[in-house]
Amino acid sequence: MQAQSKLAEVRVSKLAANIVGTLLTILSCVIAVFVAHLLPHYMRFADWHGIAFLVSFLVLLPVHEVLHAAGLRIFAGVPLRHIKFGVMWRALMPYCHCTVPISVHAYRRMALLPLWITGSLSVAALLAFPADWLGVFAGFAVAACVGDVWMVIKLRSFADTLLVQDSPSEIGCDVFSTITL
Ligand SMILES: [Zn+2]
Image 1: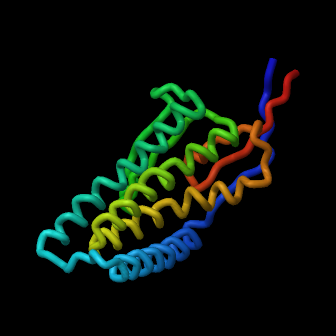
Image 2: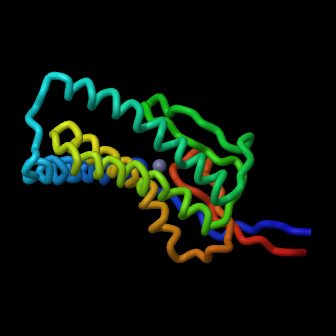
């Protein structure tokens, strides 16, 4: 028989996450727009850029969460019925929640999947079509992963084989070890 014992509660404070998130969003947008201006094929502002930004931003948020869900399926083999989607209406933030524990190893890969995919695709799009709106978009796409990277950093000292369970109410997760009785 197996039992689980809780080793740690890993939490990120909402205030700290908001402050760091806002600063890093501004910073990465400024850097990305700056890079766009440096490129020889920089594209001047056109009327449709505003709407293009808005549409891609609205697509980015659910895609980011779907990538987490894909990571849960691929890296941890979590059945779909244990993956919940929702929206934190107060912050207008969609989220993806896993109701079962997964290994720390799978958690790290799942958490960073949107960074690799939305981050690299938006930076590639910016380099191909350097416009201000794509700079701001790439900045948001990368900065949207701040919380995920933060969790991975906080989990760095835990062994790959330990288990992680999302906290149902707070930003963070609990780490468990499995003991065979
Ligand atoms: Zn995320």
